Image 1: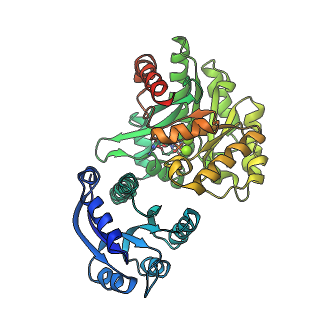
Image 2: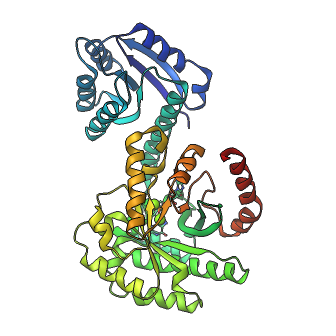
Image 3: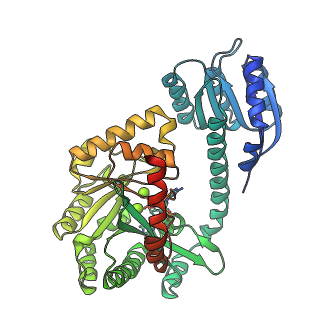
Length: 413
Ligand code: C2E
Ligand code: MG
Ligand code: MG
């Protein structure tokens, strides 16, 4: 859904004000949002008066202004929650602009862009895309509140009636774009509530103490599917998400190993994913479970790396085989020099630790090109394929993947 937005442009230069307003009124912008109202202010004091009188969704803030500078203005906007999102602009060097962006985010503001002046149409569009996707996420959160009604019985019913199922998202080699594996992702098209996000029902299952039942039910579906693919001689690994809570379950390792044996599959073809936050904090129990899984021959991935606070030392203590770089590090990496530095050095660190790297959430060609340059091992993202029902994988592999390969060769050479 396209958001309807009010914009305030704060800049002491008339030329810059006109440039931004003209770009906002350009046709391209209409794809992502509808601008109901746009105003300008030449300094922070006037801006604050306007912000207190009208609700602005997006504010462009120039850093150097007389009377009240942009840094001060950003702090007040954050403290008094005067806008939904900001874009920071300055003629100064990019690292300064980015660090003001980091300051604003840590004060709780959504920063959808940090750019050197003058603002370009491309930068404006990428910021508006981000703003629209944030607005949709906020709507999603509102909708998700409906599901606070979920109970253990709902989840058990979803399992018993086989409403909860799995989709699969391809994982490709960065070099050559070969299908190397699929990640199984839980889906619940609920007859009354509509689609419930996995985040929502998995969190609920964890809270209500039914996560173990849900995990083994889903793992069984995934293994059955893997066996069918194998029988059709489609061979690739299967990645499956484990809840961090499962790692405290004494019986997990044997149960999982038995399930794999029942389908005559090999643990080496299975990658169990656990999130980064499962390995920070008190982790000796988690490490013991993970080590046992490794001893049984399973591969292990650290998921969502970049969203939490695991440090390099914690990373080195986990017997993992793969590091999944979260989309917060990957998405729009080319537009943010600091993000680029973090991503690149994480890939180097992972290689030094003997971990395969997977870039998650690749949505844009530009992201792919950069990821390709820094020698990430595997790719996963909507740019290549969204998660899909099991029966669609074969068609995607035979018909769509060759087209993607062809197109990328044309664009990248
Ligand atoms: P995850 O394991 O990190 O899975 C990747 C998520 O990123 C998936 O969301 C996938 O649809 C999404 N994704 C992949 N490529 C892109 C992209 O290019 N752009 C964007 N915007 N998103 C992309 P999904 O399916 O909604 O799953 C969310 C999370 O829920 C998963 O994150 C995982 O932590 C959890 N989850 C899903 N299925 C299971 C499950 O069976 N068991 C457990 N314990 N957790 C699960
Ligand atoms: Mg995962
Ligand atoms: Mg992830």
